[in-house]
Image (cartoon, rainbow, N blue to C red; front, side, top):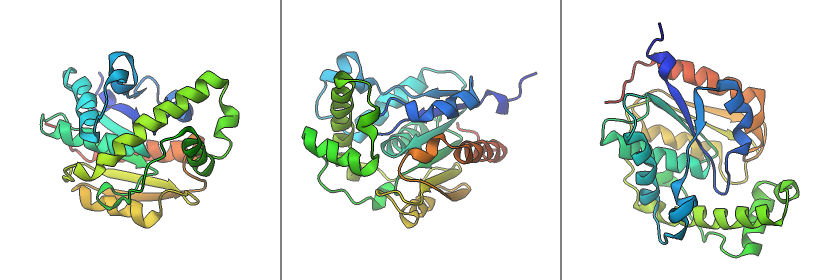
Length: 239
C-alpha cells in the first residue's frame, strides 16, 4: 500500500530563459515523481500579455496546483525559479495547498536581493549569459533557439523588477538552499538569509561550481534526495 510520503511530487521551477534541460539528470533520477513546472506566460495567449509582475506569475502557477486534489508537493526552484517557487508557495498557503518543503538554489533571499537594471537588448542579454553561464550560446542548436532563449530571458528577468512588491511572508515548512562556490550572482551569506522566511528546518549547502553547472552533478542529486527524505520526515502537511 502506498504511503502518503510516497505520493509526494517534486515540482521543478527552472531559471530565467530555461526550459529545464539542466534538470534532466534530476528528472531521470526521481521519475515519475518529478516534473517541470510549466510557466504559462511563455506559451500561447500568455506570450502576448504584457506588464506581468512576479505576483501575477505566482498566481498563474498557483492556479495549476489549485486544480489538483490532494497532491503533496516539494518545490525545487533555481535562480529566477527560486523566487517563483517561493511566491507560488505563499499564494498556495492562502488556499491551504502550500508545498511541504522548498529546495532552492542560486538565489539570494528575496527581501535582500539587490536589483540593478535588467538586461533588455540582445547584446545585453548575451553579455549577461556570457558572465553567468560561459559557453551557453555555443550549446544552442541554431539561431531560432538562440532567439527564443534571448526573448524568454528578457521576459522572465523583467518580472524581477517587481520583486520588491512581494509580500515577504514566512512559510511554516522546511527550506533547503544551495549555491555554487563560484556563482557570480549570489553568495553563501545571501543564501543563508532565506532562513528568516521559514519556520521549519533550514539548511545551506555549498557546491563546487558556478551558477548552474552543479545541477547535473551526482553531489547535487544526492543532496536533493537527502533533503527530500528529511522534508517528508518533518511531518509538515499543507492545509
